Image (cartoon, rainbow, N blue to C red; front, side, top):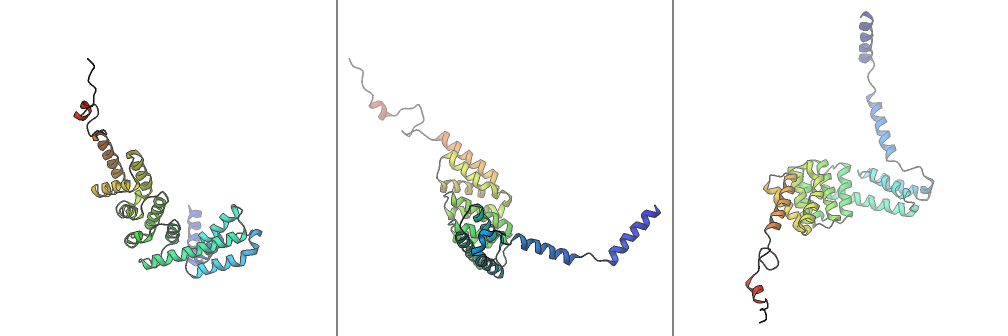
Length: 259
């Protein structure tokens, strides 16, 4: 017990006298992050390394995330792209990130997190109607939630769903049930396929049931599918009558038996 007490006192003394090197740890973390965003040490990049580094440095000066640019370079190397093609792709991505950053600053996001800038850049590249997403960009509070919402909007756009209706539905989910954002695409696809309706109608069905049910996505999907079942059971045949029934017009066309 005496030895333990002496050891504890010694540790307490050292902690009091010798401060933890927090600045050093912080510098190490910064160096690690910088190394992670450094250009790959690959001989194939030699002809364009200076241009790539200039693109990377400019992005950093503009406050843009540089990780996606380095990721694009690595992707090009993995695919065997030419150095010039890699340089051009990195330059286009840097321009997209700059446009995304300007869009966010215009819509009340003066210092968006890198994930959000990347999400908006991907959305713009996918042809998402960003004017339709502007209200969502201004209203959703957390950057992380908005980034996920923009990713969902991009996924819907790539699947052919109309942008304005999709933005309204995704914005409502982001505002009321953000943890369910990951289930929006699968849910609306299920509604569309099981009810054999258009993409616009599937979004309309989901949005209507979200509003009616207080914002729960899972409950809205279930109700939309139930609505389809009820409509299918109640729908008449082509003649406008219930299956198994025959109208007067059909009876009149029946041939009379020969005498």
